[in-house]
Image 1: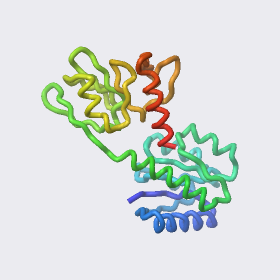
Image 2: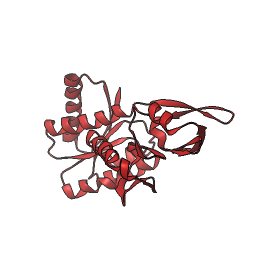
Image 3: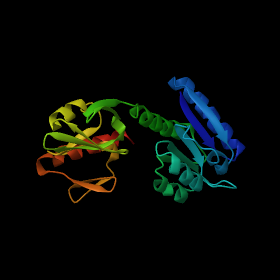
Length: 235
């Protein structure tokens, strides 16, 4: 079930987007639930990260879509936001709240399907997967998407994650084999990097959550190819 919210104050577009979602559900075989909000404050007032995708109008009477998106991002970094607008200059501000895309009004079914399909493809890539690592006093289950990068130090591996760093015995080769089916790539002999968390490349370093990880000359080209391919698939 894909949970979608429509945040729109015009009846015309609420009805149109609802019809488009119903048609998409029939033709693509997706199971979709739809919740409609008439203003930005309606969705933010009791928001609990309950949606997968939000179709957000930017210009609304009380709380505009950009402000609503900023509030939502404070509690939900994963929901996919697509802006619906008739003004391009507002839409391009979407990067500030990590919006996936925007659709210009009047909304065509073709453009809608294209953007929605891209959003659903991204959702499916997020399907939770876990690895188990041995740590002092027991074992730990880590979600692969939460791992920023794995660092090799001596006979140990350090798993840098959103919840902290965890040390486990192991080799970079074993980590690479275990995470090889996910979006990880070697930056150098010491770092195995989750491409999902790479914000950019600068001065031959991968930028991840404010940190710069050096890319070695032998591995730089292969890493860049992996990253370019990953970003292309996530469009």
